[in-house]
Structure formats: C-alpha cells, structure tokens
Image 1 (cartoon, rainbow, N blue to C red):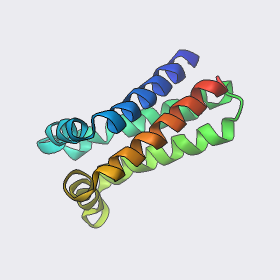
Image 2 (image 1 turned 180 degrees about the vertical axis):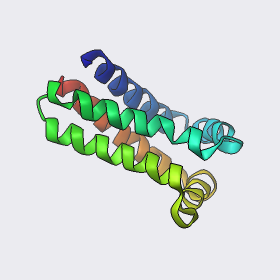
Image 3 (image 1 turned 135 degrees about the vertical axis):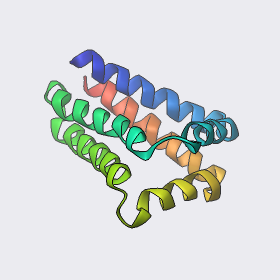
Length: 122
C-alpha cells in the first residue's frame, strides 16, 4: 500500500510542476481530457485516490492529514458524480475557461507542496 502513496505523491509533484512550467499546455490538455468526458467517469479518479489515501494513511507519519486529504478528494469525486445544482459544471467551466494563469500556478504550487509533504511523511 505504501508504494501507491509514493505514486500519488509523485503524480502530485509532476502535475504541480507541469502546471507551473507549462501553464497554457496544461490548461489545453485538461480541456481536451474533460471536453467530452462523462462526469461519472471523471469522478472515479478522485474517489479512487481518496479511498487509497484513506486506506494507506496509517503508514504515514501524520495519518490524520492524509485521511483529511482522502476525504476531500472523495468529496470532490462525489460532487462530480452527483452534480448538485450543476456545481461541477460551473466549477469545470470556471477552471477551464475563466481561471487565470496565476490560478493554475497556485494549483501547481499546492500540488508540489502536497506531493512533497506526502513523500516526506512516508
């Protein structure tokens, strides 16, 4: 289970670095990936990552933080799955169309911090 946490942390670091260094390309890639995708299918990834974080949390130095991140990831997946009041659609449109490059870079910084923190806690 520990190796899955390593994979998640490296993916967060890689995605964060990509969002910082290649902001426009990352935005275009996300647009292509989410353009015709089914929201139910998109929700599987955050729910799976959330479940993996919750299950593997007790192999880390700060399990309560990792459980909290898992709950947040699973909640994000549930929002995309059930889409109350078209919230997921509004968030997706905002993130892909209206968010500035600084927002993407901030998301990249947060991804690098989370990935590095998770990696150091293993």
